[in-house]
View: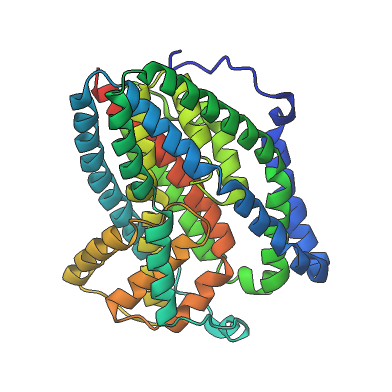
Length: 395
């Protein structure tokens, strides 16, 4: 199927109005948080439970996909070439995302705001344990670990006498898990409603409105990055950015509803393969990109560092800004697109700079739910564009 045309796949009837459901959930969740804050505070468990239910599906689906890929490969050199291209792409585009975020913050100046509201925000406990927690997230949730193990087993299957039978069983199991996951994702609008209601109910609009400049600035920066940078990459291969985004609309809405780009990776792989992208490229690029190609997280970290600096009247020299780019390039890896890991990466980034007071992190913690949604959507788009660029370069 051509990627330039709208997909002919018949969506599930329950998903037909997903856009309206998600947007309605955001509006209703905001109203619930404003007018019924006590009830909204009891809804946090819904989002937490939803992610807890989804997470066990993601590693096995990705594992089975990679094993199937390497088990059926006729040309192993192809996998090596794809990996090298992907890694070069990740470093270049991630660096551009960080610089884009820093420049956007320097231009918008989101930290130049009235600080009188800061006293009503309780600072988070930013201690050494947070660094350990972030490292644990990297070690325990990184798709790279799954990738290495799956490649090793896939290569073994590749040499096995009855590999076709083994791969057939693996593909059937993966299909079953994907189908179950799609049914679970039908609850995304409910999760969105509860997540927004809890955030507004806990912090209140009186707290969120003053830092709306940072939220709006982040969304604008990410939109422009997708339109200008990623859009240019798509245009180089004669693909219209809006048509492309329309083809992955449901996956983007799932990322919005769950605030997680990691949870939609299995569905995204299936969709991109259905749009005609090469299967080996899609599977390798999306899985490795989930740790190494987090464009939304990179923009968020770049903007947040400058925001916190402006909040504390701290300025950076050009050499210090270059150093920040290198630090963010490292700390953004391993965030894995899981809800909350972007903020943990920010804690590590701020701690590595040694110039910004950690107390300012409380401000960003209060809006992290909204920032997490922006990160998830942009990360998902970034994975998709990376897969397309590498796939098209193979022709």
